[in-house]
View: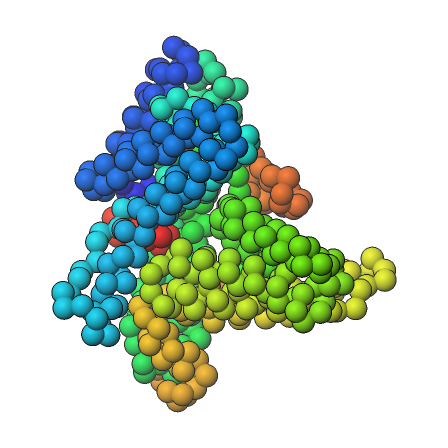
Length: 505
């Protein structure tokens, strides 16, 4: 079931809200039970067979969590944690990578059977990562043991089940204690509905309008001229931006309707002035997850090994070639390699991850070696300096997104060839039309000049240091009319609206 579908908008969501209101009078447990049941129904609508995958994963991790919590010896906790993580990754590998690998081996002459890929359970990466994070937190005393229904809700709560955000247990479940015996709150309903409508409009009106132009460009990747190639990847970048931003807004808005606050997951990433800032703004909860559970452990292991060898782990040591490779480049490249294969099984995703790993490594090197500013004014770049940094960062992101979007590495290389002129400069390329140029220009203007959703709604979290914008949301008739018009426009596009791009991950 999609957030941008009629069945969700006019049947599922009203039933979920009404049911919540009815059971809330009986206390916290009925509320948790109702939302867990509704979330399973939501997931089963796409393909009911995969409910068994979801529930099997939840049961496996619930049992593992009980074994971790009941183990009095730290070594036993660690053993159960390793077993739990291994089983989770084995399930993810089976559905997401095994048959891609077998198909690749067949294509190079290894194996006689031609394997076809399995249908991928929606959101398997997200609910797998969520549960691995919970097991790690539980083993470290950072999460509390839950009964089965509470744990099932934590994993399957429908606003974040399919494409995030990736939640820590302590971010969501304590809120059900705080909201004990409460019913739907009008203030949360207003903010949540506003957030949802803005996200729905981004997805249906903007992202889905840009999609056909981007698809046409990548379908002709071997013949595109310079103009069409650059225009196509810009249009795809905008499609991906509004698609994922729209989903994130809808997820946050839906949770807020039930008085649950989700962390921010998207904060105008194309306004980033460097690649590290880009990843702090794009899929923010994934970046946080990777930092906590991948980058930091790898970095600490490297530092411990250096200390045992009698080497320093200071910033000065990181400026030496060997220290930089060990302490900075290796953890960064390893983490971003895993980011690449998390997004998909093809070689193009590996290249996408390694490109961003290279970007981040260069960014780290620049920060280590550049002269330190002596005054506060020197730390504040001027408008043109900032704009140049933003454009350079965006250009780097575009190059990596070619591999992210292409169907294969070969297609991506041909597309890059078009971008650098290997297919010629075609002044009358059919892919370059007044409409496509207008869409790209308008999309970039929106991305770079208008406030984002959390700025508009004034619900900026502490991690997002932005001031309230001139376009601040208020519960007024003007905003009601505006949101009503946006909702009406979105409904006009719902019948032709597609799935969210991040569903494939």
